[in-house]
Image 1 (cartoon, helix red, strand yellow):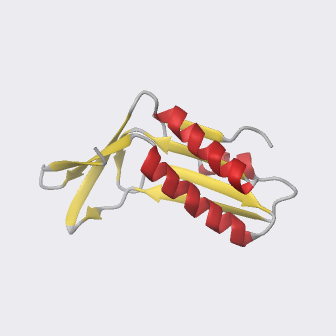
Image 2: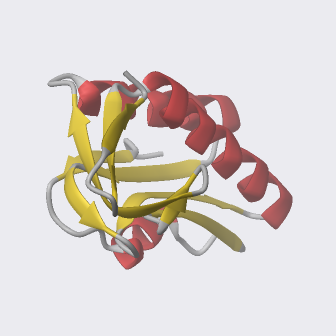
Length: 137
């Protein structure tokens, strides 16, 4: 098994790139999670998000992917966006491939939770009224 794709990106994310990294002839399932910027949070309208990452964030992301790949034996990949994102932009693309769907679904959920809790990336939510708040600090 090759080293997982794990990258922090300042440019738009490509779902097809992440999916193709994990796909292959032995896999009957590819499960992809796309984290999309939504237009609200906690009842407040959101205009944009600003993601900032710790300088070591990519190392943490690689570790998350490697741990999930090692424990599951499956092919995994994840790319997280930083910078200013608007409603509809992709913030995270994570994918897992396996011979059957059940393990791909479960492993993809595990990967996303691990990334959310272990990778030092913070977001500033900007609301349409001009106010903002940091999440994850």
